Length: 594
Image (cartoon, rainbow, N blue to C red; front, side):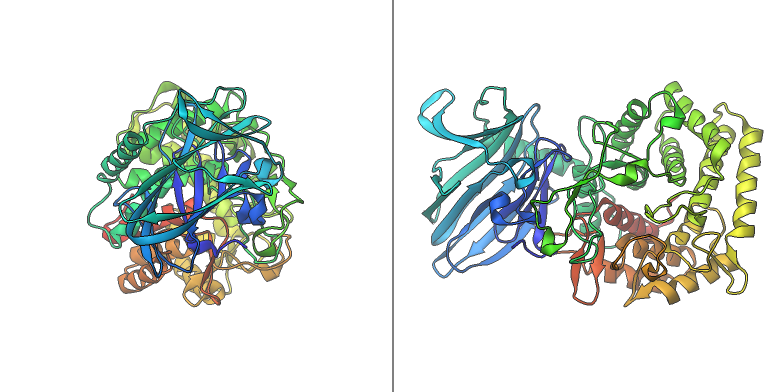
């Protein structure tokens, strides 16, 4: 059985990522890319669906932490007879992917259990496994697993033996001993690669990540979690393509035992834009340039072809289907790969894209002719169809609606386009963009309001509220001291708050077209922190921020949602949306952000 979600930690090489459990088991890893099929998939099934275990064979306690401000994970296991540490790291390499596990004896003698169970294609396919002399070294062996396009190679000073379709071993580690194991992926048609210099790989990865994190903001509340969040956002950014994934996992449930299980291993324009906004606000501009290059390649020539999400490399076809051979995390089926939301209309997306571009310009990122041409084309196209109903920010699978948040973000798209012309001297049809901006604003204030309660509404055909309405003052649609904003904040607190945490909306209305319920969505509560701070409610903002930071797991990671009743994390993990809003809230508390 997989561990509680919060008992996992993330390691990665900015091409893919693995979840390492507190029990020493790597239960999730997709190779060679975030959105590739998993070779270790025990997280969503059973041990026989693939995992890599390295842990004491006897009863033990575990403590863990990242090594400084890096993504190198160190776990200390203590038994009745001694203690060991395991350092888990994924060094960056071109054309291959390595997961390195360094075992060190700290005290006494510890009996270790080693299991290497490779199951390709999301835990379904047993590879052809052979043991052979290693490349260039007749004194060393390697275990090679091959199926379809994938080849995995296990190396180490003591390799496990084949037993009933898996490779297992038990051995003693004494104080001072160091054993380093590595699993390497290459295409199945490629030769087994030479051994890497793992000492150099570990040290260079540590040094590079520490140098990057040295640029993180200093004077912010809960700086340790801000730095960890920024490092996590960087890990979720593909170093070569620039695609930013929403999470490294699929189908971790929003409703335990239910069907609200989605694949988040892709690049949403919205989530990626928000991530770039958070990185820019924290002072990082290289990632904005990398993402802009990804966007220019991905969107291509016709604005009408714009999708809300893409594969990490910009591919467009992400058909959603179910994996019947996996039982799902905690019995939460179906397990899905691909995402049907790829075909949805979400009119808010361009607003986030334009805000990110606006923030980049303000941060000194130079606009290119092609990048502005793309923005202008997208905004011009939006002017022709902004008034259509859509599926909204939350990817509603019920009927399309005129969602108020979507309209507000349409306003933001035109507002930032207008700013680009007025403040930065870029060329564009200023009068038309101003006119559409004013039309959108007027429509929202006429149709998206409940005059009885004095609030904005989730969509034009309801009096329900939605946590996304907290974005209204954050993007500048209305000032935070506007009576309509104040009424909306009160209504959100009254209708959506549970023990201090906000739900996205009330699922019992049936608006999302799905059975079951969900838990409070962490990003919404971080939005509320920012709104409290803007409204001068600093004590409320700090109290809520402290409470939210208090539910991060022992290594500073957050999932998508939080099960308040049972004190556990829910949804895909770690979630970029949660971490980027944590960063933005901390910066808001430290001083107003743009």
